[in-house]
Image 1 (cartoon, helix red, strand yellow):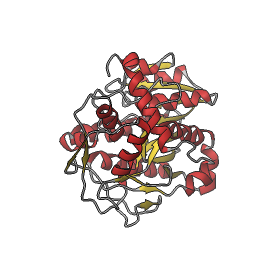
Image 2: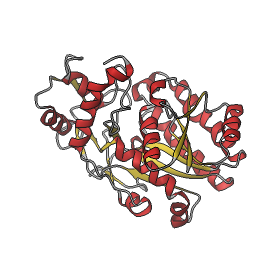
Image 3: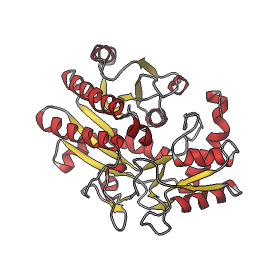
Image 4: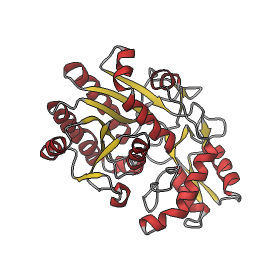
Length: 334
């Protein structure tokens, strides 16, 4: 199959492109390079530009008339930045995606796999969430993801558009060959911050929020190896029509996680065990927009996609550490 990957120069996009290739498919990359580095594109078919550029989308489809589906990953993703810059987040994540979806339908390319987020879920007492559970997005970033879910659901009812919405939990690590990983010079994600502290690039790792209603007061997350996450997209593409036939609907939402919750303190303990020494720690209040967290009930992904995670938390930590050693070679900075 041939698949358009928006945001395919980014962390998740480039690793998903690699997973598609490993499964025998051909990714076509569309990325503005606002964030993702060009080096992550490698030798793939690549178009530099905006997802809302209809003329560019028409050219891509004209040059790749055999496109089977689109994986839409292009987005701004930093929660605290979304609190500071809500206009940019709603413009880029919502308004531009509307143009993309409308043009794809017009071009007869209506199959879309959409990158959504577990940050949408309302807090539950046991923290395990199903796709039907209540939502309470706490940041502009999370609200843009919820809006896009609603857009896709409404367009799927009214047009030929068809959508599989994947609600990600917390990806970490690199691809197996260490060709792509976290690229921000100072990553906002917890594992990137831990790696920097472990390698002496930061004075300490700061646990943000220590009075949450969890077993140890720190936020709870479902940390999934990014290679497992990429494989889930491959399955969504390969089983697209069968999935929607099984649910008898033009769109559906599927959690993509491990099915187990890990607190930040537990993550730090696991990280220190894999790393082999302690990491200096500090504590601070939650960042703006931070959620307590949740972990996935994963029955639906197993049933519909035939997919479950295969890699462990320790595997993901080891992969993130290995990428921390490798990324200067690829990106030119630690």
